[in-house]
Amino acid sequence: MDAKVYECIKEVFETNTPFSNNLGIKVLLDESLNPYIRLEKQEHLIGNYMQNILHGGVISSVLDIIGAIVAVDGVINRMKDEPKAEIMKKFEKLGTIDMRVDYLRPGRGDYFIATGEAMRTGNKVSVVRTKLKNNENILIAAGTGTYMVG
Image: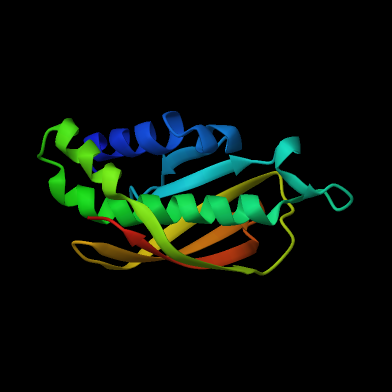
């Protein structure tokens, strides 16, 4: 991922989106420069206090956010030579069309990593598969999302 593209993604999803700020997500890059989200377990994100597990809505929200990041990344990486203002305009059209989440295990862990892979990215729509794993690399949930990207 281009540095300018990464800067735009962090600005939109980590800095300027109040909901993402409330979740406390961090947008990072792996060794192959693919984006991923790290989410620390926090008390206000717990859904079942007796089991001390993440709320299902938090899980689906994080999968939706990484899905949107991967979807828009496929479009804006083609624009890496454009001015930042032009790249940022692409985020105006970004939106979730449909999403499915499979909750595979309870959301236990000290922190969580959300990743995604584009199945197809067109000029208008992108389809992304997502995963959420805990700090022990145990798969907690998986999803598929369709996103408007243009």
